[in-house]
Structures are given as C-alpha cells and as structure tokens.
Image 1: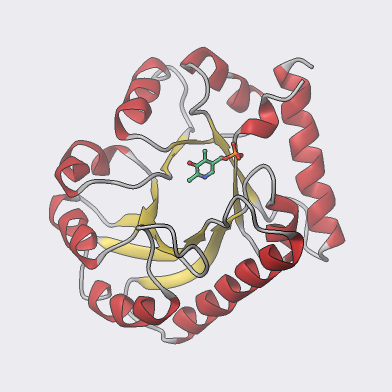
Image 2 (image 1 turned 135 degrees about the horizontal axis):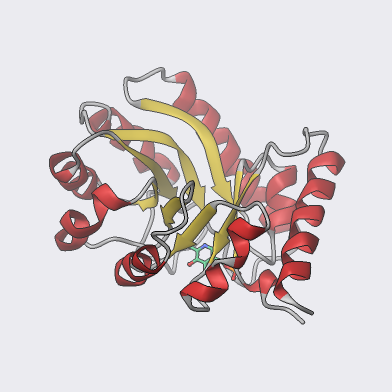
Length: 225
Ligand SMILES: *Cc1c(COP(=O)(O)O)cnc(C)c1O
C-alpha cells in the first residue's frame, strides 16, 4: 500500500481509539517515527498533516532536519537515549526530548540549553532487562531535584512496554504509568507540569490510548503493505 494510504489509515485508527476510549478526536498527538527510512520518506508526514517527527538517534535527527529545512512548522522529537557528551550538539535543535533517564543528564541539559527544553521522564515500570528509565520509586525523588533546574521543563512521562508483553500486561504497565503521571503532576513543582503521557508504539498504541496516552510514537505501521 502506498505510504499516503498508510498514513491516513494510522490517523483514522488513532481517531477510532480516541472515540472508543471516550476521548475527543485529535487529542492524542501522533508522532511519526522516521528512523527506518530517509528524509524523502519523512516528507510524506507533513503532506498528510503530521508535523511531529521523531528519530531515536542524534546524528540521524540532525541529518533529517538538515534535509528538510525547507519545511516550516515541523516539531522534532528525540525519542532515544541521549549520552551526556552529545547534549551540546542536539539540545537546542529539538522541540521535545522523550528519554530523560537520569538527574545527571537533566543537569547537563539545563546547562547547555539556551531556553527551557520540553522533556519527558522515561519511566521503567516493568523492564528489569533495561538500563534505561527511572523506576517508579526513584522518579518521585528525581523530580524534586530536576525541578530546581531552570532549563528543564518536565511536560510528562514516557514509557515503553516489553516486546513480549501480553494485552493484560500492557494495560497494567500503561495504567501504572498514568497513575505515576498524575501523582507527579499533583506535586505541583516548579518546571514539572507533567500533563503528557508518551506511550504506545505500532503494536500497542490502541491500548496506550485507552490508558490515557497523549502522544503515540508510531513507526513501522507506516511501512506495512
Ligand atoms: C522506533 C521507536 C518507536 C516506534 O516503534 P514502532 O514499533 O516502529 O512503531 C517508538 N519509540 C521509540 C523510543 C523507538 O525507538
């Protein structure tokens, strides 16, 4: 199937999930993950009304950005882990960073940023295997420290489910992330708005939307034929 049809299918399917969850249409932001293809492929998204583009690697994001400078209105999301030594090269070129996973990284971002950067804290509720993300218990302490950093704005939480999670586990993980988001929001800390939930990828975004996702990061669904 041509890419434009895939994009329209995904948009429609997200709208259906919104309706099925009693949410208003258009309240979940679709972030198009472009990492599997080149910048010409990425041009299909703004053409179809999707202006939020994501890459998981610093060099690839900068490459695409460079190739698409003729397009205005794009919002760039870095969704992959960021090494501290690379903060300086990328942080002032992006609109959102989804994988903030340590206090040290937050400090480096605040130091290098020329203005407050919208970040999401990566939380890791289930994946014992992963090195990345705050545990549910550590994140509450971390936000207190991060709230003292003037150039880091925590707009929400980001979560990824294990590849082999079944439907029941997905509901549990995304539901627990939602609870954590509300808990942090209720702390009412400076720079910690925490209203967004970036969760849901191609295989699990419908469940994530049911559990309150406000941003879904979709890549491979656009490639299916
Ligand atoms: C690649 C990637 C996605 C998109 O995953 P798909 O399964 O291709 O939709 C979402 N989030 C992160 C962090 C990724 O690296």
